Image (cartoon, rainbow, N blue to C red; front, side, top):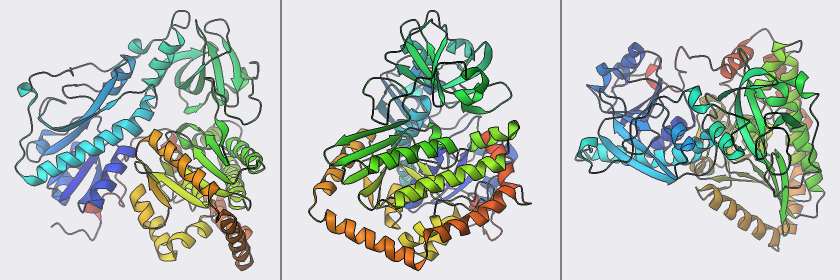
Length: 570
């Protein structure tokens, strides 16, 4: 079928649904929900048989839903209505939640139900639940709804006909509903409230007597202080005491600024706060904030790096490289880079780069420092002659993060993740991380050029089919981690491991003799230098609008196929 995805943005759920539908043979085009007239024009051009709305912030106009079946993906259980479904579910400590696919009608979220799916709730940020449980449930429910629509015989169920509905209409959650009282609220309450606002809009609060919105919090097991006081700092996070413990605050957004690591957003004030670093890279068993953590099991080392939204600043790349150098000196036969729960890596840290332009620094200089730090990290991973290295992608991965992962000997991706191995969407950025060496040798030159040109997301299954990855493993995060550990242990115990390492060293020496890595790097950086310092400001403009979440004014043509000049209405 021809299916139009009408969405507020090309977010992770929209990417997943588009890729899954295309894999099943459907013709998919995407239109951003900018205005009624734009959506109406997209429908006229594409003439879809079905419209699916994965992520909207306003109602579909009657001029569309009255003439076409429009399926809305609502992140709530059957009967739940309102714009803050997941926020209320987290804040109210729901133990089970779900996704409902319903037909658009006059009343918001109240149309006939085409499909639904439920999942157990875990203690996690809203953004994490959305990217994992909600996306998985939504994918399952949408695919079922599409099959039912395609059959032509399915009749959706009206809410009025259901004997018992647990969901209900709830209002937009406001900041008064999220209010924190540091002199009364326990750690668990504060964590739950900030979790319910993570991603957007954050919790309105203050630090050092100045207003800000809080994001990205973690409980602390041992450190204590006067409730409400900022009592410690560690790398990019600040620790604030509660009545029964303390909470690490990872990111904040000050008025008129952008979301930044807490210690950077309050850089001057943070200098007076005691520094409490962790000793070394070993994973700490008790609850605390630890962005880089190493653990071992038998002859396998596991390097975790939990960077918010997968963004890796210059300093984070340098620290991760230090941890990698240290881990390579351990007597392990296999080294697995685990990344984080929600993202493996998305490459350079655009928000930190943008912050450099807000003060006396230079966004171009920070971009240059960041990409070189990413390259140093990738080079360290490529040059690992004594271990078999594995990138275990448990979370989504994009841009330079994809090629950092490909710098490992093997890449294993969780079935539910989405990969975006390209750069051009960020102002025609050329990209580095040795991609011109790493990508063609895996997929071939023609396919590599197509990946960079087409800028389409890849499912884990599709990435395996084209040779970008080496395995597609279990869809659930915990089962994925267990399978990674089992497979890595088997690699470490395999009698042919020594032969594999010998072959690896010989191939690297052969490749280096043919064309040194330094040559690939210099060629890539020649292009990147133009992106950062050249006359074309496209990268800087794209970055500026990306970090400030500017409203889009048009849908990129590589997504809106119906707007191609060569498009012919079927």
